[in-house]
Length: 148
Image (cartoon, rainbow, N blue to C red; front, side, top):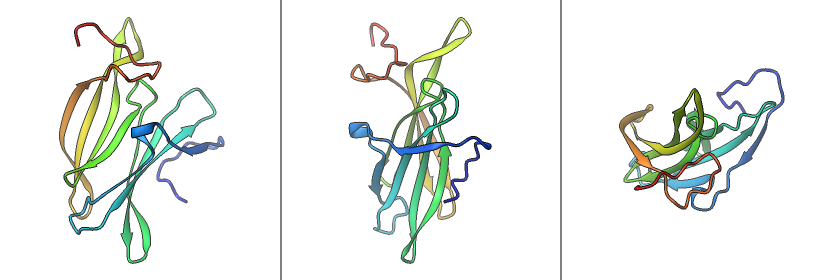
C-alpha cells in the first residue's frame, strides 16, 4: 500500500494504535451522505527513537475503500498523536503541543485540536483549539501543571 509518507530506505514497522478511547479505528459520516467513513491511526516504529503516527481517512469508491487523506503526526510531546474523532460531520485531530523549557521540548501540558471539514475534494481546517491535558493522561511526556 502506498502510504503517502516516505521515510527513506530504513525498514519501518507499522501497528494499529490501541489506547482505550483513543483506539486506532473510528467511524462516522464525514461526507454528509449518510455513509460512514473510517479514520485509521497507525503507529510507526522508525530505525531511531522517534515515534510518529499516521492518520488515514478512508471513504468508499463504489465497493473499494479509497484513501481520502493522510497526515503524519509528530513525535510524542512534539506534536505527537493524542486522539482522532468524528463529531458533527467533522474530523477532529488532536496532537500534543510541545512545552519548551531551556531549549528542550520533552514534555507537554496542552494539546491542539484541529477541526477539519470535507469539501468533497479535500479536508479544510476550519478551527483550532488549545486544550489543557486531562489529569488522567498517563503518557510519560505529559506534564500536569498545578491550578489547571
